[in-house]
Image 1 (spheres, rainbow, N blue to C red):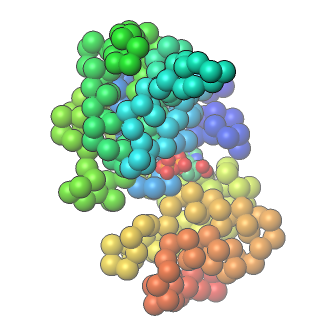
Image 2 (spheres, rainbow, N blue to C red):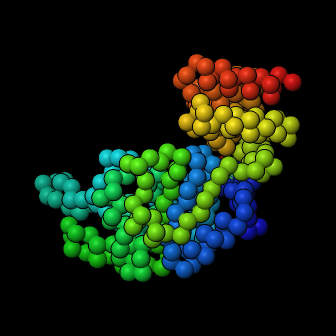
Length: 267
Ligand code: ADP
């Protein structure tokens, strides 16, 4: 398999946008934790899955949320058959197995939860499990990867500076048009013309972001629209379902998006 493509059309196909695959590999080989910043749906999760497969490591993913506790990550005692037993959480499992642990949207997690990552993210590379008294030493193959969307950020939801400066970081954004077109084709099987039209549409829709739209039309949504079109859906209906309704509840903003779509597909 060529180094920068994992089977076009396979779930692990990843179109590199620059030298991020090399950087990931260097971080992995040097036992450095990695932080990936970028908007929703721009390819962060796919990138991590691709790299885990490429490096032959299993991947354990945790979608972070504001109820996530340190015990959810590390583990807890459970009761079964009249006795208590210890159940590893996903982070502990990843450390034991030498897997890649991916914490998606880390800023959603409470700050006291992220503190449990600290001893794992410096040169100690240990996970202290308070409840059992264990000090787990991470094997060389273990890697911690976290991601967040800086667009969501407000003062309450940012990564603690003391957490964030423990990582090497990669900034992601939506792919440039030529590469995004390739991704849409590979992921959906639409022809070049439809893919180029959708990407052009996304470029224009993204200009509305910030004014009326909280979130930009993502590569993920473009792939959804392309899949609907490939399945026989009218382009306008596909774009309505994939690029208007998921992005806004506001009727005026929806109208503005429809105008952009009409200008793109009405030609
Ligand atoms: P994020 O984790 O940033 O929210 P994902 O990794 O889930 O986004 O990407 C959403 C979808 O967009 C993927 O399932 C894939 O179809 C497509 N995609 C985005 N970027 C790429 C890329 N560089 N190569 C291949 N597919 C991509």
